Length: 231
Image (tube, rainbow, N blue to C red):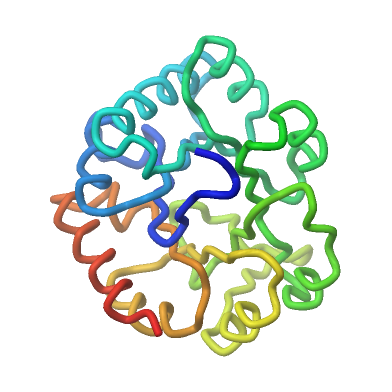
């Protein structure tokens, strides 16, 4: 999948520490069957080799379930993406944060067709997305909507305070951003109707699906709610 053709409306972030002991590829399979259309492999615990293998397994599931309809990226680890591609694994790109490998470097090594996402700055968010050079990447990740235990440092400002984002701020962000915006961080099923009405491009979740008793049913419910609520 190329940077010109991807769907970030329903975006799953997943790693082995999030699945309650269940196999990562099986949770991905159920989520895709439920309608999720973007997968990010993210783990602070897995080694590079383990991340490459998880990427391989995820790519295989996507090939079997939704070839050409689901994008696959790896969080932060340019080395893992390059190693995976060297082994013939179909990984579409990378998602990086403000303190990770610069997007221009990612673009240099991954090529013009790769999908590159960037986590937007938490403070002065709207001013930032209007001013930053967006030529090297393809979408903004914005969060948290509320504090989340999955990534407790998400949204911390320099003083250690968590900066969350209101629906009004997200509505203004969607209107002004030159790139699609995907919003997550503590997002639950009951948030999606109002979130969809802000005009952002999509929602991302971790534990709402990876920690659900039935990942398929939760993914299906979230995607259905989102699609029905979109303006």
